[in-house]
Image (cartoon, rainbow, N blue to C red; front, top):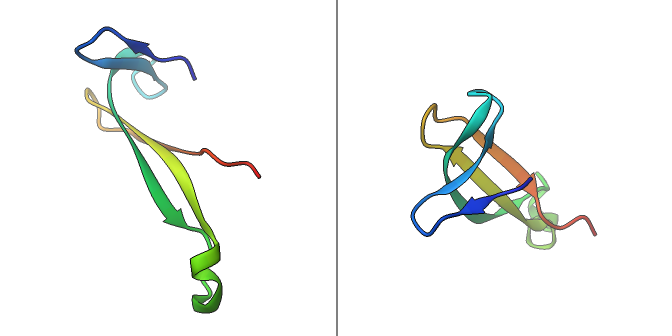
Length: 65
């Protein structure tokens, strides 16, 4: 997932638009377990990228341990 940072916008490929578009990118901690007793141990960082043209959001797990 290549990204270009020109100092103003973050641009990367959008599969919905099928071209390079500006994206808003953030990192979010998500809980992967539905069980309450395990929830504290199942949090993982995800990279969320939202296309500023069409609104499509992609989520990529950052920790593959």
